Length: 309
Image (cartoon, rainbow, N blue to C red; front, side):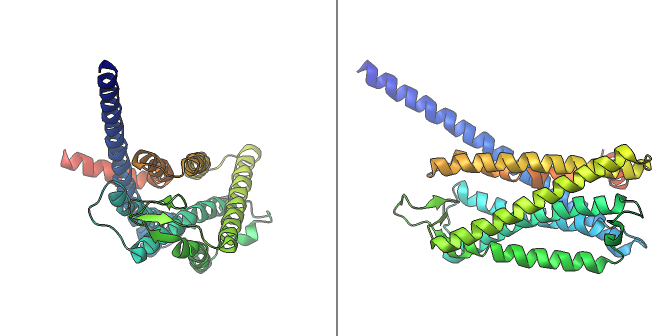
């Protein structure tokens, strides 16, 4: 009948539009990941060179290099997860699912830790000599190394929850599973473990966001009350403040998208693409913000561009 034909055409048109949207989002996601990995690699090499070879490296060289390394691992991991989400022929087993999801969760936790540490270090560096923060100024890189090691151990511990809750998605669909990729899902675990993980992760995020807000507010206060800083110092501080603002926006946007995804529960590939695109926006764009403040990197990139063209 005409009605059945109309319904068939309408469904075909909807599926075609959905496929087109899926392809567009997928291409945008892989472009974001590629740009992010390249930018973070440039940032990591630059600050690793400064930290290892410069006579007097900056206190933030190790932290920025660490942040770039975290984001490289995070983006490589999510790209690996995306190959499964976008219809890989090979399915993963339990061990692969647990390790990949655990690593990705650990990198996300380390990202907020390193970002907060960068903000706090910048605030301490700017503080006057008679300030109560002056005694916290790092006199040795060993302090940063110890702090970095502690953050890795702590975040690996918190993300250990996913070593228990992540399973290979069974062939029979279940309403109790939350899909992470095509091959991997989160299953309900002991209430106590889920509660401990939620409390630890929430406590960490709230404390770190609070520290970011305090250090950013302190930097703004220093700029308004004290004498103007040298242009490089001012530019570096403005970059850190911009980075903090961008992080907070992306953090709450990611929470919103994740909340809607959990409401839908059995999310499809399009929703998973959008969630990954938003969730990794900070890791891809933050190195571009930091590179924009480094004149030496800009000069090298301009030289390479001119030489190639």
